[in-house]
Length: 230
Image (cartoon, rainbow, N blue to C red):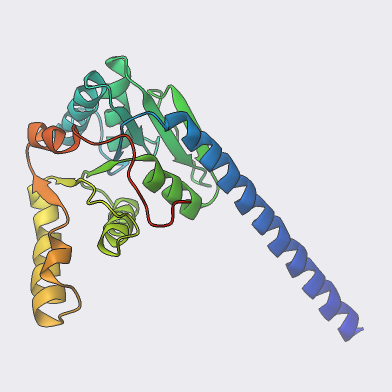
């Protein structure tokens, strides 16, 4: 009896793993198929908090950057949700540009913002993050939470380890927010523990100027070479 129960349990977990692998594979296929639409585009991914509301200065600034990029013919990509993501998409959408959302399905549903003319959604965070990384040639980070920081460190790691072979523009918008992280990295990781080199905490630009952010990313090429490209 016990052996039969154990066998059923193993069979159940095996089926569960296979179902997950199948879903991951399907999402990866759909994601890379989606990327093909943007082979000829210059693309900037913009990240930031979903909690920022319309009327907040950061919302207006993200919207302005989205507008400026769209008018330059650059595709604007975000996580497709509210807050900073909505603002950047809204600026691009209102300017007649290409406004793209790469969304995540959550139990506490993160709603899609209404300023998207192309979108795709994923169940798995890691697939969404992979597509957000691969689609763009430059990245702009507004103040945000765990998701924004996760995506920032992911891209920084890819650049630092030369998985992305060219130095991609990385802009951190909002000095009050980002300078505290910069000080931690310099004083603690670089100086005290020597776990990072000075060069690795100079991969990005911190600014309070939307114009400066725009000028940094506006000259991006249409394709960035990654060492894992085939």
